[in-house]
Image 1 (cartoon, rainbow, N blue to C red):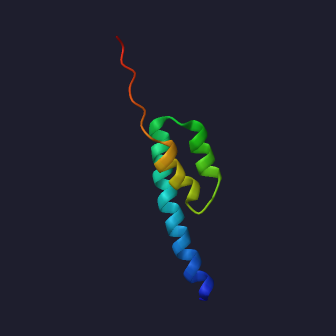
Image 2 (image 1 turned 90 degrees about the vertical axis):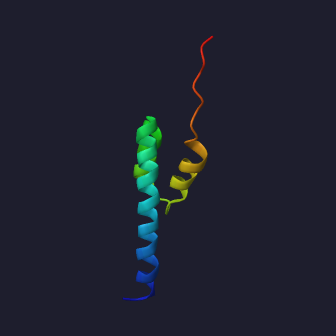
Image 3 (image 1 turned 180 degrees about the vertical axis):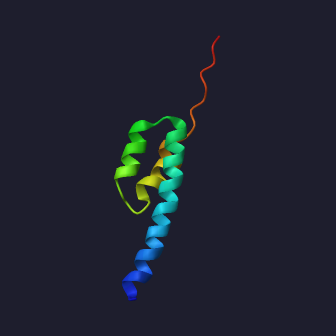
Length: 65
């Protein structure tokens, strides 16, 4: 095993952890487009982190009068 394995294995673990969390949040929120994008695009966790912390913020429920 070379230096490449010391970089690749942690990168894969990092990416899978963030991807799993982001996919779960997108599915729970009903964001189909985000779910598909997160599933198909591999950005080493960058897009997943952006979705979790920026785009998946909970919306306040609309109050009726």
